[in-house]
Amino acid sequence: MTHTLTQLDHDFCNLCVAGGRQWESGTTALTVALMDGQYIVGNVGDSRAITSRVCKTSKDAEDLARQGWNRTWRDSKSIWKEVSHVHCPSRKDEKARIHASNGWTTKDKTVLIPQSRDRWNLGDDARDVVPMFEGILDQWDQINRTNFVSRICGELAVSRSLGDRDYKVSFQKPLSQQEATRSEIWEGPCFLPFPPGHNQMFQGDLVTNTPEFCTIPMGGDDTCEEFLLMACDGLWDVLDPLDVVSVVRQWLFNCQYSPKKTARLLSKLAVCLGSSDNITIIIVLTEHHTPQMN
Image 1 (spheres, rainbow, N blue to C red):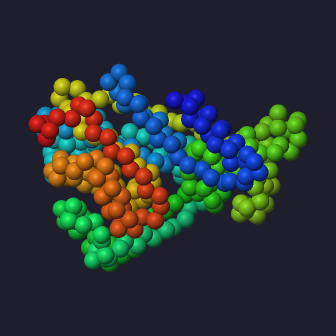
Image 2: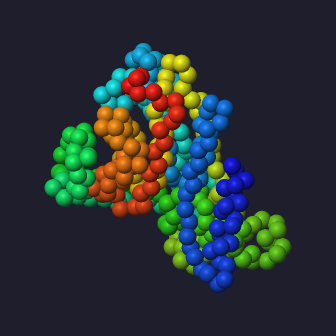
Image 3: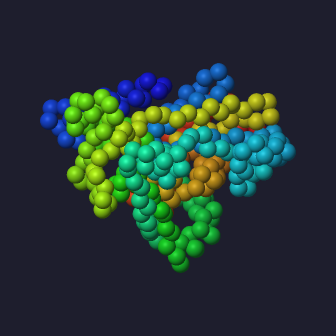
């Protein structure tokens, strides 16, 4: 999986300059493999994955909560866990790597402005989840919700990605063959807002293509897998994982909606709550799901 993702990054960066192109594109990657009774989740960037389970008893759920799992609303037997690592410039180790490359990080403030509720176009299919958000929405009617976004060199909001060749040493013209061989020193792109006194030089990658992995055993005799959800940051900008799990469980198991319909409604909900970023959502019902336990 590591080889596949790094090769994909290399091929995509080459495509961005082939035939005289000057594409400055980039994306994140989130992959999941189910092997030998466990999830193997590989992530590059700020997309996130969560898994939901239901336990046979409330005590089983309490035991798993002490092991790092999280409880959900309304169901004492339901638990969930985030199974991916987010790569953002504010993360301590990512920030240290960026600064070691002679880069810098900044923090922006953005205000999310949700649509007024009378303009929500979720339809009757989603009316059952609106009461779940009444308290949040009442607060949003009175105050602005603020997000803080960390950026590399005042520009890019992820510290690992596929593409974004302007931030990677392999796709820069070296100052000289000797310097390139010795230290991977390269001159930064002119569009960066360099701070006063910066020499406009970097060493190594500002943004890497190295995936990070989580391995999570699937449930045993006392728990049952429910679903795995993967989504990019357009969803997580406006909804916390607990909110997402609660809404998805309501639509999948109480309303009996399909994963595709649930993902579509969830993306609409994110837009209504003020998301203006790309929103991609994949929901997978695991084969171990048994409705009788729910």
